Image (tube, rainbow, N blue to C red; front, side, top):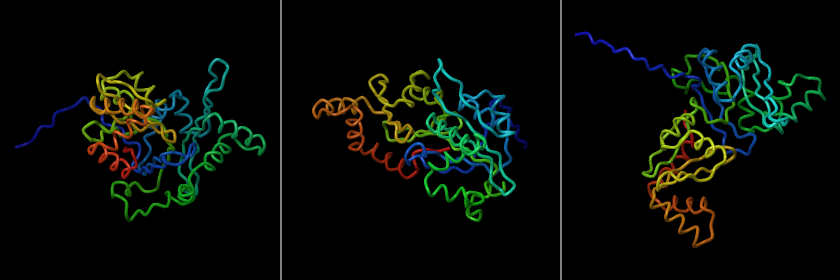
Length: 286
């Protein structure tokens, strides 16, 4: 008997990376997550996702991924509030395509270096980025395919051959999963602000403020707490009971509510197990 597969209108999730290494525990601005791909680049999808993630027009992003170069963010009310996005094309020696973002201070440093050395802004930007990276990562970037041993890689990854591109990411986007510790101890991953907001029953605007600025957000009688560690958001949701405990602890010991919530989390067996797992997995998934 033949099985008839039902057609589905649900689009297949885009696969942008099959190698991910987390360096988010290092001091900013070198705190990045290295996202690499060995399979052939799906350029339209890659451009769309990076465009959405970094607020760069799709046409500009597509051109950057094809030709390389930089996109300098426009001034806001006469002020420069963001730096630049850069794409460096791969070299004949096997160096993969690379994309990254510089903040305002790094951008200023890159501009000065470009003028002083008479090199392109993209070349100067790469030098500025690389200087901030952890030594372990610098050594890997100096080797072909990040120094990976293809004999130990998953076959589906290894069959793609050489690394085609590397994105140095720091963002929270639909194609970049992050973990949240739930009150029952589960580690739930979400991709993007919309999915995170739906999980917790809050608005996307509230989610954006929370993961970008940190702090707490009451959700009914429960509370979401977000700490920004090296520029990366770490989120946990607390039960109403634990939230009450934290507020009482904060009042009794004159603690900030975030410190009180941390103490309560470490006293809760279920959350403590999640915190240990989060440490072991590097705090994020893709």
